[in-house]
Length: 547
Image (cartoon, rainbow, N blue to C red; front, side, top):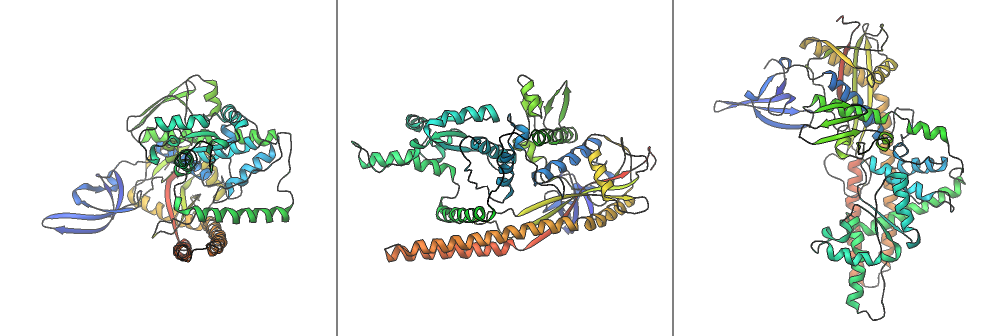
């Protein structure tokens, strides 16, 4: 083969041949698929030269990847290296948050774990704060099922406020309802309990707290009562019941840290009864819904689906045959139109379009495009890259609760003279969110390879600062996790030492030591960092159709 980069007709993807073998008259190639980062063996007859394929970088594909990278950048926590988290919940809610509520939301989601105690005074909107945090987690794909345990007197208020302010449907379950639902639940295992019948439940505190005894009840009936109301709740909600002791220790340690922080910093944030209309409007007018719309439409039109514009909504046909009629991407449009289907980042399929974006292979024909709205003086090579940090690659972490993959995105622009202009690159990326990139021609294979190499070198130079920031954030998370873990295991051992029975004490100490060794092994693995750079888009920006 003339070039190691080929096109696999079996996987419909560019691939790199890393080994070729002829056995009993059959030629077999071992190839690397960059989009799935996997190595497979396929017959040589399933490969064709990459240059012989029409460029997949069509106008719709360019719009899809350019918008998807913007969405992914928001999901990773920022819109640029200088801005903080972009809050998604205020964009979708029907309430204008107060300044301290926005601050609480930002702080609650800024850490690796979302464990937050909202303890404002009466009337300062703790329900709104909790609803904002819940919506934020759902939009980011971190939460699918929600359980609210509240005093009986305000349970119905919770249902009403979640519906009014956040368009969230919750099922209210009171004490007498639990027994009925338990009888209606199919089967007797935990996966088919009453708590698994609904994804979002509000239940009164009295309904689920366990009891020691009750007049006229046998011990077996009391045990059954506690199981159906208390134990099943947490069996359904907690994925790792073996880690209860560790979780409690972590929570105690975190509360101690929070108390110390409050003492040192006095007031965490100022309380205001007046909404910050300017900040709220800035959040609600963020272009994220437009990016999600452009990403979805571009993907469908470039991957075998179809998107048809109908007035202010879309009729969408996905490649697998699924359809969405009267689809909109803005909560305001969904409220205005009757029977509209709102597609946002809460939809796992839409959110998945921004993850694992396809890469541009070396030697893949690169398009020459014109972008309306750009100054006539802009001409050169433009590229969009994903900077990725991955840790703990050789094992799946079970005891650590920190992200093992961190991503950032950088765009580069090389002028005709070979000079690197990062502000111009960002301007082109922003322009691609509203303007169409019209493909005028395609570079030859040699020119495409040269352009790929030049942009790759420029991206490595421009991405150094971004990778350093990702690495610093990751190591800081690992250090915090180490501090929490040491406090948790120390507290756990002290608690075990108070156990009276020697056999039980020795068993629990041995189990604690085993888990601590596993935790330290995972912690050491998390410190091993692997950098990666992925080319997502590469274009030749031309003036008025001149190559």
